[in-house]
Image (cartoon, rainbow, N blue to C red; front, top):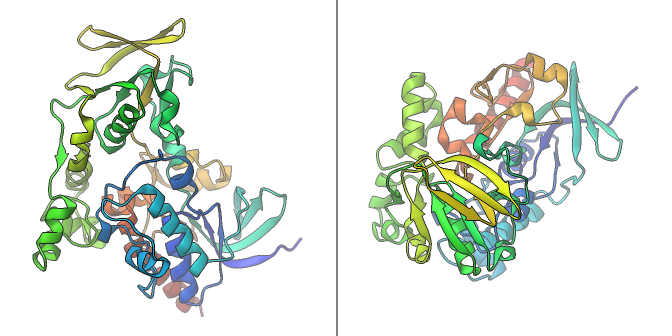
Length: 395
């Protein structure tokens, strides 16, 4: 039986999927994109959030360089400033998609199998054949729930990514777990919504991100020396992280050390004032969590207890590509995986020939840059160049 065929199928229509498809099409590669544009950003991030990244590090890459965040603001005559509001970034993503990829296929890919070429099963029962598949399906499946909270039902403990509107917790006592941006911003938004909030974190002190957006802007030409456009990591280390093809050459222990230093839990300085009224408990972790009646009872490792209406887990994400339920059993069996991450070559290609991964799943091969929107440029170019080289070598 024959099926409709495409050269490249991209799964995911967030920043990485959109960037990959725009570069591939510009190179002449027939490309189909599947997914709801900007779905994770629109549905699984809280209203009122701001981007942690600087303005200049929030562009979705396109080959012409004419569809940046600033281009969107100018052409659409919309007003917003740094830090970039989530709502404005989502609108930018939709604008980018309409301009460059108006034919995004919004059907869901339910299964990928390979027998020579790839066979994609779609949510409406149709099937597509593709020579290559690019997985840019995001991190929603990787939300991390610490084991000590397994005993709590969802109505008492949930991940920060499960909430779009935090105002539902108005008047309730909420415990936020975590020491990074999502935990702190969730705590601030909850407090501003009228909840009574405490944040508990393992680190002994809060790490505030230095080098504010306003400070960097005042640096002028010196900014590019200290802060490359990718804006990931502290000065010095950020120059290495901005070059994933070099970062991957480092010994694994050094990669791990540098990656942690670049993205260790921290919060933007502009959140500092908004945390007034939020109790912050440092150097502690939850040891036990149980439900009594309508309340969650949390015991910390110092023996103190908290009784709250709900626990918000700002505990981040842990990549495990086996949790992509659309990957067929045979693909998973042959896919080389290291601590949940696929092993990738320079073209972001996995051990399954023709299967590529973008975004966070590529971080163990290319470093922390590819966890951020600013990594769409390197990733899309590396992917496209590799596919072009492969096509030429076979012709």
